[in-house]
Length: 153
Image 1 (cartoon, rainbow, N blue to C red):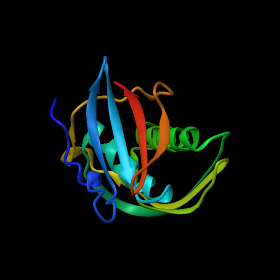
Image 2 (image 1 turned 90 degrees about the vertical axis):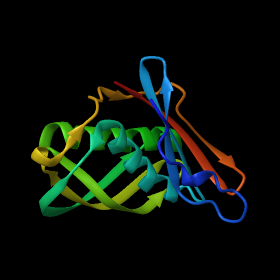
Image 3 (image 1 turned 135 degrees about the horizontal axis):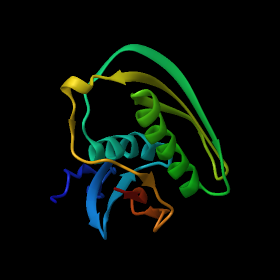
Image 4 (image 1 turned 90 degrees about the horizontal axis):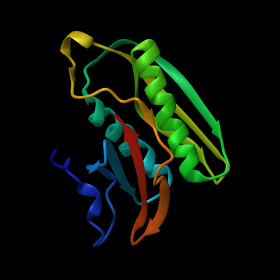
C-alpha cells in the first residue's frame, strides 16, 4: 500500500493540515498534522474516509452537532472518528465541513454537515472494523500538532 499525499509536513513556515496513511500490522495507521488542535479534525475526517475508499456524497443535507467528553485530547479524537464510523455503518452518512467549536483537554464539540453516501458511485477499498486505542496520541511538533490513530481493518 502506498502512502497518501501528505501536505502537512511542510514545517518551514506554516504547517498545512494534512494526513498520511501508513501500514501497521493487520491495520492501517493515520498520521494527521495541523497547526492547531482544532485543525486536526478536518484531515482526520478525510483520513478515515480515505481508509474506507472513495466516497461519493448525495443529499439531503443535515446539520449535526457532535459532542464528546473524555479525559484527554487523543481519546476525544478517537471517539470522534468512532462516531463517524458508526454514522457511516448505521445510517450511510458522512460528515463534511466539520467546524470545531471547542477542543479542550476534556471536551470536543463539532458542528458539521451530514450527507448520505451514494453507494452506486462509491469505490470501497476496505471495511473498517474499529478505531483503536493502540498507539493513539496527539503530540506538539514544530509548527503545530501531530496525531496518530490506528484503524482496525
